[in-house]
Image 1: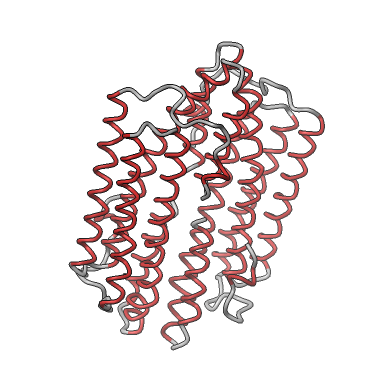
Image 2: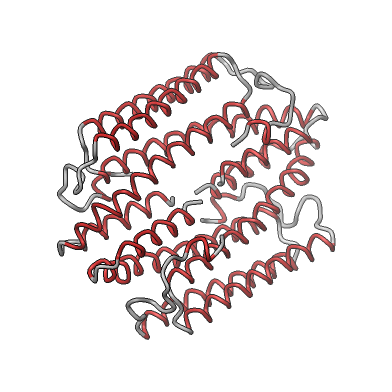
Amino acid sequence: MNDKDIKMVNQEEPVVPRTHSEKEGITNRLKRIEGQVRGLQKMIDEDRYCVDVLVQISAVKAALDKVGYQMLERHAKMCVTNAVKEGNGEEYMDELMKVINQYSK
Amino acid sequence: MNDKDIKMVNQEEPVVPRTHSEKEGITNRLKRIEGQVRGLQKMIDEDRYCVDVLVQISAVKAALDKVGYQMLERHAKMCVTNAVKEGNGEEYMDELMKVINQYSK
Amino acid sequence: MNDKDIKMVNQEEPVVPRTHSEKEGITNRLKRIEGQVRGLQKMIDEDRYCVDVLVQISAVKAALDKVGYQMLERHAKMCVTNAVKEGNGEEYMDELMKVINQYSK
Amino acid sequence: MNDKDIKMVNQEEPVVPRTHSEKEGITNRLKRIEGQVRGLQKMIDEDRYCVDVLVQISAVKAALDKVGYQMLERHAKMCVTNAVKEGNGEEYMDELMKVINQYSK
């Protein structure tokens, strides 16, 4: 789970900048996820049945997976593809494979 | 991901009530996760590199998995075990298996 | 992945013996999986496209997951439930949780 | 799990052919996996304890994951990278993302 183990390129921002609308879309998803996590705290506060809480945790994980996959796909199709075209794709592709390996765990 | 597909017992609260200390432990973990999700929003706001964001999403998922597994284990060892001992364990065990199947997806 | 890290009870056979029909069912599934793995070798031998092979590997994994889940469910509902009823369920439940944790990785 | 849902390019063989040594490496791994699956059948035949079988199924899945990841990585770094360089990378990258999404399920 260590940043340093996965990141391989000296890159601080996306290779292809996120548009305003892309940033808004991701932020809205993350805000909904934040609300779901607060909902989980409320369920614990209200002594809700374990399985109800577990089903909800599973829903939050699915939402995180969705936003993660969306970002991964955009990164591969835009940033990595661009880097390959400009002839320095090797380390971006290596890094992409490390991220994917991390996610499959 | 539907509550109704998984929940099988007519139970509103844990079979064995959570202690104050157990509730506090879970709530603290969930608050940290909420903070991590806000951190993700900040990363998007600051145009951080895709892989940095993805590594962080992976960390949030791992934290959720941990709190979920902790609750699942407690539910199995306390609630389900109790129900089995009192002779009505069958539907609790069925339900537990459904939860586990859901989590493995 | 170490047997010794997960197994907690001194048990050589299922607590509730598998019926002839149960054994036959599992064996048939495993034989099909063995055939699928041989099919993968043939695909490599025939220089088949990577994605075709990967889709097939994914199918074998799904088949293994299915037979694993079927055995896990039967173990929980029969062996673990029996042990709990006879008053020595604690270590069987501990062990079940370890198996589940292993599978979710 | 449908081939047609994932495969997007009209490709029958790897874009970059597998060397003899690569084919041998993959085939050896798959033969070992085939042996493990036969070992599972023997365990059922010998009425081995459920958890022993489950630990072994988990080992086979890990071995399949390893060979799958190895092929995925090779496909991305060689076939997809090549296609991107030659200007027809888009559908190969789309397809790669579909495979990855399939594997993460």
